[in-house]
Length: 342
Image: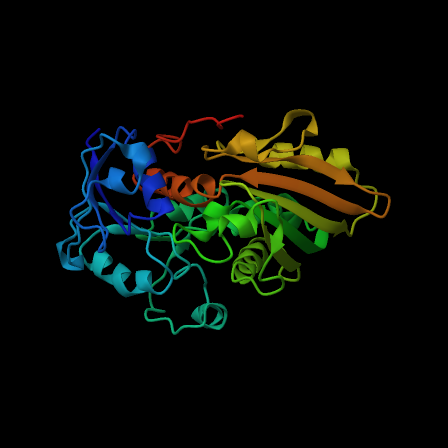
């Protein structure tokens, strides 16, 4: 099979580095262009030391000069939507890793992201393969899901589709890499080490993304609350999903069996045998989402726990998974790494 040419726009950050790490071992890909305005002319290993020996340099081409079968846009929110239309006009397919195209209603984006949407006319497919695989196949623009929504949605889909709950509370713990490569006061080592820091407690911008997808997929009446926490680890998101059953005579074993059946054919969702509790260390470096620890207390509160690597299934790995589907490759190509435990 012939190779496709890939461009990574904004490749200086963690997601850009992960895209290169994954795509360098992909047999159907030629990484043609990696861009960074600030680091133009430097080898990628200057910023991503794990890529030492890789013969790739950062460039800074004009959008009209980017020639690729698929463009991964790893630019910040707001910056991406300015350039995506130009890559589409070049004839490229685009996978956008920002939040710029994740919402059906651009007014929701403007409310939560605090900026005017420049291209509400563009239709994107929400790139969560577990719910939109068929649409992804024919898409030209993919909105790669956020990291928190990936773990939160996957932990919720079976109970939402089967209308077993009407209220979900997501409590997520995220590694520091989720804040991006640029250091700030919140991610300063003395501030975040030996500490757990809730933030954006009732107004995180991933909240409407989770709500929209679950309401589109299942009950339009399901209510979702979400609070993230920063924890002193580098990679990973552990999400504890709390909900209350609205149907009687449902046991924790019933829920476990439901999840096992629901995800049995999904290559990257692992419902753990014997209902073990997922570990961040078990998914580190992999494109897997592990689900387990399914429990029901004496007041019918259901708990479901999911774990992902925020930089892989939560970002770059999922983007490559979407690329595989779009171009007819085996969905798991380049993504078969198991977690780096311990």
